[in-house]
Image (tube, rainbow over all chains, first blue to last red):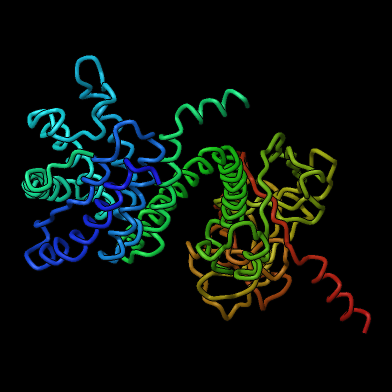
Length: 172
Length: 293
């Protein structure tokens, strides 16, 4: 296995465990608007140079793993695959001047600074959450509820994202 | 094909995304009760909507066909209406009651089953008429082509006119009641007394009623109608009124001689109806049986 992928493997296991065993329990204990989805961080912190195809497949994979805890086959997988796709677009949109040099293995605050990271992760989590709640509701009749849930979850999730980055300061 | 393959490879991420999403949605619908219910309901709505649209289109394209069928139904109704009107032509013929509301569309025989009219009326116009001869004739513009036969009675709304004697394809000669051979079976409407109406010449508005028995008290102005016994005329067609005091018959003292003022002015006959007795042949053969015995 490529050595540079090893942190991602650990991140996969760790985030699925935290998501499934901790955040899911907390969320279902509070109320339906209390949702923290931290696992997409795995998708965001995949190597920058990774192809979209792989990102989509890995996104679907971690989604499936989370679905097992949520007993909602396909819902998180769909959102994960969508985030894998969206990631490429967002990273291309927030390309720094001169492009990605190749010296930065992952889009972390360590390399690009906090303002850039907060923008990228904010948009990334927003689209992921919106897609997730849409598939979960499965009808745009509930558009208002979907948007409300997305905004609430985005605010909560971003706190955990920042905490995660401060705690672990991921470099690769 | 090669270019399509290139397109897929170049946009591999996007196509993978589409494939994975298709798979995910399949799984979501298959294994999640809530999403499955929503999906099934939405598909039901979509299918209903599409069926509705299809029905609208089919309706639109079948408009011509429906117009045609309405038109033919209309023609049938017109025919039925004409039939109903033809049957109702006897102005005061109470021999039968027609319940036109029960006539079923397209079933012209139904009217016979319900009401069994005995007479059919063929409308015609007088094209020649005399009143000043000893034996008078009328000529009408209908003949055998129109169903006329010798022996049919001829009436108007006001009274009787004569009897069809000679029939050509398009014209007929009608023996007027003002004819020495004409003999009409009539009754006094009030007294129910039978009599025989003849014309003895002279005044074309006066006929002579014979063979009314003397025990019937007859007054001036009493109404005379057809008896219906001769089958030439339906029962109850107006004929006229008693014009003068009853005179005992010199030849046969048991009967009256009565003068009758005809209700139909024979000098101004124009629109007439030939009376077709539908059961004439049946009646004739029945009478023949009696004769043969």
